[in-house]
Image (tube, rainbow, N blue to C red; front, top):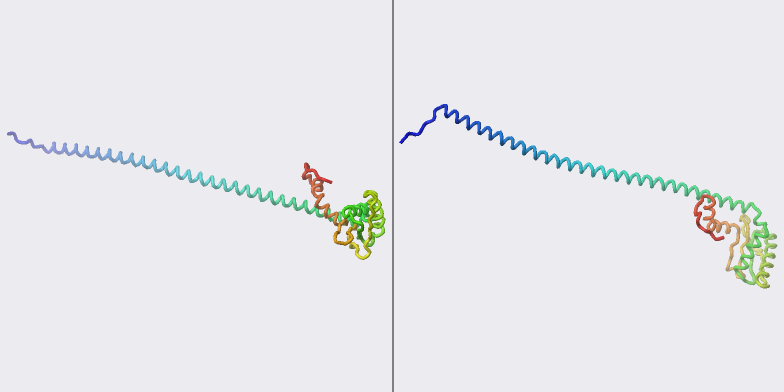
Length: 229
């Protein structure tokens, strides 16, 4: 039998260098593999982070944009309401002044002295009450002209009602206030029904009934609306 061949020192050194080179190569490849894996995971995590942050920024921007839009709308609405209220206030102030001036004109004017106007007011009361006897109240200073208006109203009432007579008495005890605008108040025989045909009352009715027409004339409102006389 032959004896095992023993390696020389040079051969051992060569084998060691080969083994060392192999181990180093394995280590380098492993390190490269680890590095590539780390780079890949880093890229994935970075992409996730970028997407998350981008989504957060977009959501935050959308929220701020919505809030800014709502704030702008609220500001516009608030401003529009303030302007509208100011306009309405100015219009109402103008209307109040208009009717206030009309009231003053009624007290200062000749309406209470116009027999034709008073006759119409008395006649309206006669038709409304349709009784044999009525009482008319007026201002003390209007008694004379109201008396003439009453006689004219009685005559027309009799004519229109087929000869029916009506007794009209001017109240000597109770008068309309002297500082009022005038006109008449017509009561039935028992005094329980009172038709207020004073100029002050007519002006109040005018403020309600004619207000739409006045608004149309002054401000151009409700142009397409039809009003009854």
